[in-house]
Each structure stands twice: as C-alpha cells, then as structure tokens.
Image 1 (cartoon, rainbow, N blue to C red):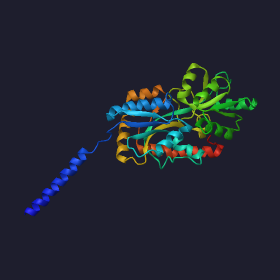
Image 2: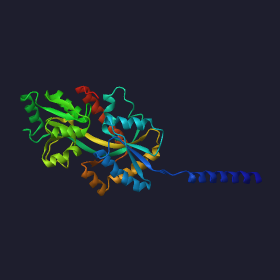
Image 3: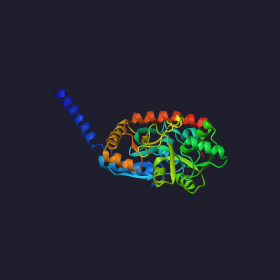
Image 4: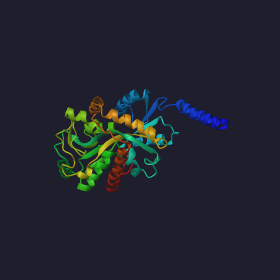
Length: 325
C-alpha cells in the first residue's frame, strides 16, 4: 500500500513539475520581432511593411523592428536571411522576384526560396503598368508598337535593371510582336523613372505605386495594367488581356516568410494576426493609399501563389532570354 501511494505521489509531482515547467517556459513572442525589408526606406515595400508592423506590434504586445537591406533585386536581404542563425523572432518581407524570378536569372543564386523560406502569408499586391510619356502620340500598346515600327531606332524603354519585371515583360512583348524597342536598364526604379520624365526614353513598365503620382499629374499616360482585372485607381485603363496580350498578365505581390527552422505553430499564430489585420477597413484604406490591394489568407495560399508565379516567370524568361545583372 505504501509503495502504491509512493508511486502515485511521485507521478503527481512529476506531472506538476512538467506543468510548472510549461508555465515557466517563455511565451512567444518574448522579445522584439524583427522584419527584414529587401528594399531601401521610403519605397512602397518599406511603407507597406511599416503599416503591417505597427498593426502586428499591437496584437503581440511586442515591438516589431525593421531592418532595411536593399540591393540586387532582393538577393542581398534573402542571402542574409537564409544564412542567419535560426531565430523564431526573425521574419522577412519577400517580393515576388525573390520567391519566383531570381532563381531563373542567376544560375548560382546564394539562396533557395523553396528550401530556405517558410511562407507565412501574402500581404498585398499591385499591378505593373505600361506607361508612355504624355508627349508621345500613342494611346495603346498596339499604337506604341506601330509607332516604333514607323520610327525605327527612336523608341526605347527604361527599367530598374536587367531581369526586373518591367524588363522581362517588355522583352516578352518584343519577342511576341516583333516590337523594335531598345532596352535601357538603370540601377533602380528612381533613375528609370527620371529617364522617362526627362525624355531620355519613351516608355516604361513598373509598379503602380511608382507611377500613379505622375499619371495623376498628367506627365505619364497609362496604356494597360498587367493585373487580371482593372486597377481600382485606374478604372478606365484596360488590362493587357483585354487588348490582346494575355501572356503579360501578372501582378507584383509581397508576402512574409519565416526561416525554414521556424515552428508551424509560430507561423500559424503570426498568419492569423496578419489575416485579421488585412481584413480591417482601416488597414485596407492605408494600403489603398499606396496603391496596394490586401491579400488575406493562409500560408498555403502564399505557397500556391509562389508555385504559380514560378511557372509564369520561368516560361517568360526562357522565351525572351532575360539575364540578371
């Protein structure tokens, strides 16, 4: 009897010890969370991340700090993130090129978007827009192609660099339509935009947030958006599919990723809070201010989006022979 009592008591104490140990374990998050941002401060990605970070910081009662590591189409940030020590408080905002384009442009890429990153969830998307200088006498992509053919050597486009989305889309268009446009790559969206505004080139294709102020000012004329449906900020501008170029249909999206070592439970928790934030009217309004559409959903949704994007961009790159810088 005493032996039975002793064993029962020992089991009870052991269970109590395990319970106390679980209670004593640090909850997540127990310190500031860090978001790596793959572009410099002040751009649309940086603004988008700051809006999200502020909202999630309120939910987790821990501050979210941002560290900008721009350069090389997101490769600088991705390489740093992939090679950082395992840390379940470390996350990265990943652009579509980082997840679905770079691996087809750079044979010796220093990270693997499938093996090194675990999707948390999509944040927002925005279309690319084909625009021309308002002084150019064209009002459609077909008109631009015709204009270039009767003015050989006089039509060029700027891009943020070789291998950028704008560069690839325009090179695909050239292959498909025999469009005689000269590619003039720059180092970044800013210089590419300045070249267009200065009249050094005649058109460009870039993300809507970069272009919208100039469209509204009347200095640039939009010809088409690349999204599957028309953009809310440009309701009178057709999609590429509407005007006969469905193979250019694509959007620029951003999502949050964790390290591959991060537990599914933590990924699920932060995804749930992200999803809540992305469905709130005030948050939607803030994204609308910077021309982004929120993309609430699960980590599986981001995984599927990345898989589909890889198919699209792999085919596009193979078709036009684009190379990274």
